[in-house]
Length: 281
Ligand code: GLU
Image 1 (cartoon, rainbow, N blue to C red):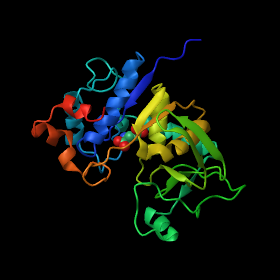
Image 2 (cartoon, protein in one colour; image 1 turned 90 degrees about the horizontal axis):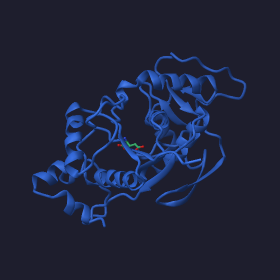
Image 3 (tube, rainbow, N blue to C red; image 1 turned 90 degrees about the vertical axis):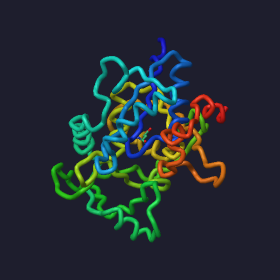
Image 4 (cartoon, helix red, strand yellow; image 1 turned 30 degrees about the horizontal axis):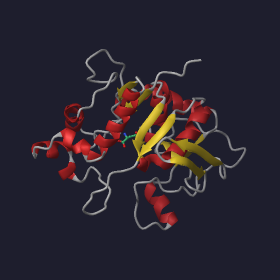
């Protein structure tokens, strides 16, 4: 049998202007798709309505193109496209939430992030989801709760102690232990929106993605996502986690708050995309 055509994706969140770190990851994604004669999709991950702004979404297309990126499917691709904008796909995510609930994979939780952090004695919230101590985790034999409860989020019950392994395209063999390296994680938020973990798995599966290329900050989430693929009966794609760019002056990871390295700011200062790309090779 011939292997399926490579389908990769770039999946920015319009919570700020794109910076050089995003551009490099997206460039790698594009190269991998082009080298295999495959397709590259653009998906706009704009579920977090409080943080995503239309102005950033509009800037996105322009910044991607300026940098030399193009995509075969998705918004602004120059042809017809399926709705690859997450805020337009809520019904689909809700159906998957119901599947997870009916299968007994998730449970409602009333603990806030602050409750979790204070229980853990953590001084501050990092970017990684804190390890949930399981206060709301049902006991064996408890009935499955219905959807529609107010003011709860839904957590995925991870199989404690399960050792998970996979080979990453960039980083090689990876291992994590469920319940040790990460705890029960949120799949649906109390504000009525799907969490990143669920939406990304739903979409990568529905869009037939064969390899996910993204930043190494999401490496641990890959294990959470493997559990969701399994619970939903979807075949997972391959994963390639690109090492993160760090600021050469400070050694600090580039993030959106480093406004000076936004593609917009670089362009305004006369930077050329080709020269920027050459610094990585
Ligand atoms: N939208 C996510 C971000 O901008 C990327 C998610 C992913 O590639 O899985 O961080």
